[in-house]
Length: 225
Image (cartoon, rainbow, N blue to C red; front, side):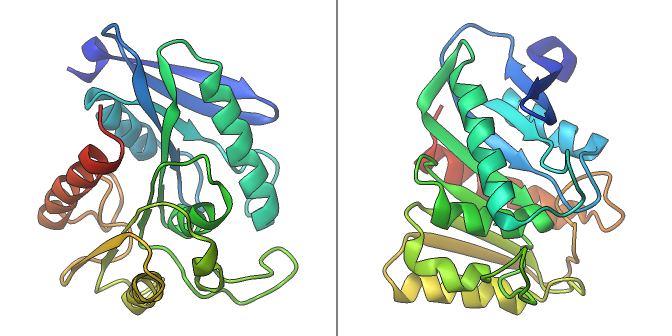
C-alpha cells in the first residue's frame, strides 16, 4: 500500500542526505520535517515518514547528522532551516504549512525548534531531553528556551524511559503551560524509550497505536491536510 501511494526518494540539499516521501496523488500538501534519533536515519524513520505521507503530508526525513554525530544545537537549527528552504522549492508543497516531529535526540531538537524556528506551525517531541549537561555545543537546555516557543507543541513520553526521564517532558509541558503557551502531553505508563517507532527494540504496540491517534488529532488541528 505504501509503495503504491507514496513516492520515496533520496535527496540532497547542502551537505544533508535525506529522504523525501510524498503522496502520489495530485494536490498541494502541508509538510512535515522528521528528526531522527542519535543513532542515525534508519529504516524505521523512513517507514514513519512514509506513514505520515499516507495521511496526506509531504515528509522530509532530515539527515541532520551529515557532518558529525551530534552537532552543536545552532548548527542543527541552521540545518533545519535548510530543510525548510528545500521543501519550499518542491512542487505540491504548501510552503505556509510546515511542521516538525522529532524522536529521541530529535525530540530534544523538536523542543529547541519550537523556540527558534518561527516558520514552523507546530512541533512534536517524542521522549526528548529537557535538561542538558551544558557545554559549548549545548549552551542552553530546551527548558531554558520555553519563553521563546511560538507554536503549539505536543509532548509524548513513556514512563519507563531510562534514557530521558519522563519527568523532563512533564517539566517542559508545565513550563509551557505556566507561560500561556499552547501545549499538550501524553504519558504511557508501560512504555520505555523509543516505544513509538516499529522496528525499535523498545517498540510498544499498544502505546504506539494510541500515540498515533494522539499525533493524528494534533496534526488535524494544527497542520490539517
